[in-house]
Each structure stands twice: as C-alpha cells, then as structure tokens.
Image 1 (cartoon, rainbow, N blue to C red):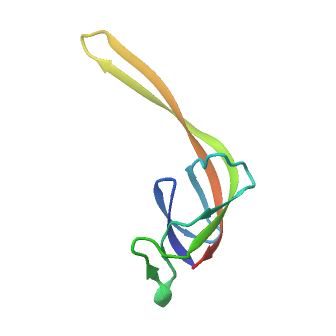
Image 2 (image 1 turned 90 degrees about the horizontal axis):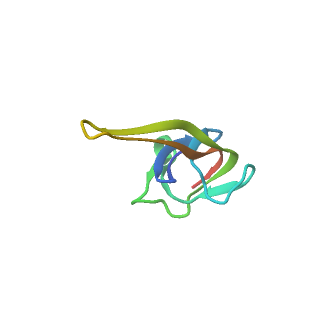
Image 3 (image 1 turned 180 degrees about the vertical axis):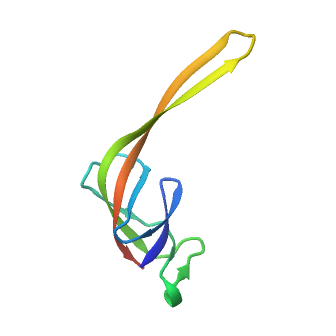
Length: 104
C-alpha cells in the first residue's frame, strides 16, 4: 500500500519499508516510533483515496533509525566596495526514519 504523507513541513510518497531522511523530530531518540496522522492520500489502483485535505483515521507508523546532522552549508555575504563580509555555517538536524505500517 502506498501513501502520501505530510511530516515536518514536507510531503513524501511512501510505502512500507521505505527509508526517509526528514527534519529532526523534537525530543526523540533512535529506536522510538512516531505516528504520522497527516495522510493526504492512500491506496493503490481502484482503492486509491484522496483526502480533503486529510484522510480521517489514516495513520502511518515510522521507526526512528538515527538522529544525525546534515552536511555543512556555508552562507557567505559580501557587499562590494563597502568592506562588509560575513561568513556563517549551518548544519541541519535530521532524522532517518523507516516506514513500518500504513493504516487506512
């Protein structure tokens, strides 16, 4: 069964067993399970359903495999002829999740 979910401000097309990298879930650790209730559509073929905007009662259960940080991104700002230069780095907090079950 396939589903389109909305989690951490992003939308993903998932099926059971998929592994995703999403923005970190707050106050969670590796091994915890997360229940995603924002399911936009679910099913395959003739049993495909689309929510308006969400499907009531549908949930997706995911297990957190790992919490990590992404690659470093360098933000460099400069104004020419003013002598202004600013360099700043950023690393995004990420969670690696595995989709365990889809219930419609």
